[in-house]
Image: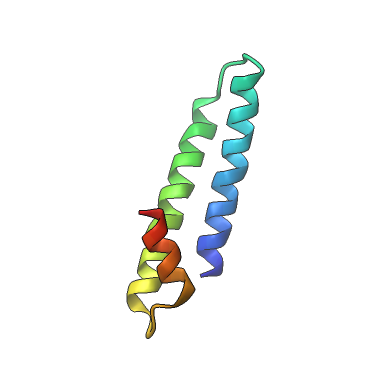
Length: 68
């Protein structure tokens, strides 16, 4: 679960960086965009795996349902 949170945090950080570049009118680095998408997707996949292998649904399950 901690790894999923860390992946989402890294994706969010990259997203904020990309947003500031766009709002300033600068070009966005493709590498950061790929990191943003990859870390977000990996975080979602890891969260799904954790929920499907858990004994109970709990708060992470609710978070996954809200996200989809």
